[in-house]
Length: 276
Ligand SMILES: [Fe+2]
Image (cartoon, rainbow, N blue to C red; front, side, top):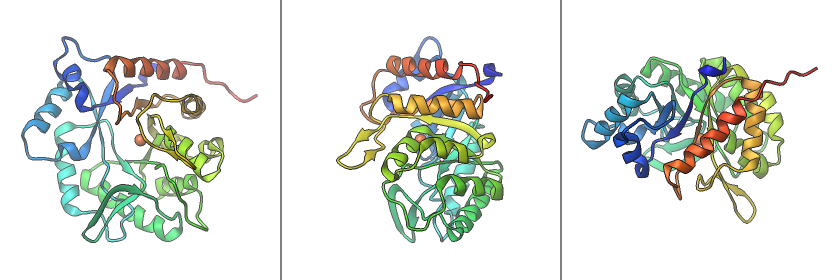
């Protein structure tokens, strides 16, 4: 069963030489690329994608679909994403439970949503439109956040309802749970208990920073002990799930990330504990 589990890394520019030109392929089972960086008609980005795809399965991870936008998902964006999906034949296609665009304004950020029935209807309609456009189920990632709206349902209840309504699956970001749990004062184990574990198809691991009053989702440090221990609890619940490390700032040599990935392999290889 565990033999089916994949471990991967995000493809970042400082590691292009390692991934594209190394004598042997990097020891990962998949690489995740940022969709928007490759939603172009040609040139170097698509050459990079073709070359990495020759060596590894690829997951597509979007950062600007804006699934919370009340005026819908941009149809031009969806057409370009479909073209990329057809080209890359990805393991997964994911984006975030957030919004970034309204009218002509684009925040270039993953902004939080109020978790209520009205929002659920909007996000579900957008997810369904996106899934129709790309011809497959999407993975929706839980965000990190720094504020919440009064009267919300819990994020885990919202994601559970979204999966049931649309048939989407989940990209569970363990660091985002740790960050949001600290910032909003909920129990991360309660979060894990509330998500539909059978819908988790991919897991993100990353590091964060301590701000003055809040944890900040910076992706600029190694995965900390709090994230490793919640990963151990998550993988016990979900069973084998494709796992990868996100590092977007202060990017170290690839060898350091591969050592971190070994840690993920080790944790995931521990026998599943059954409650008595
Ligand atoms: Fe993530």
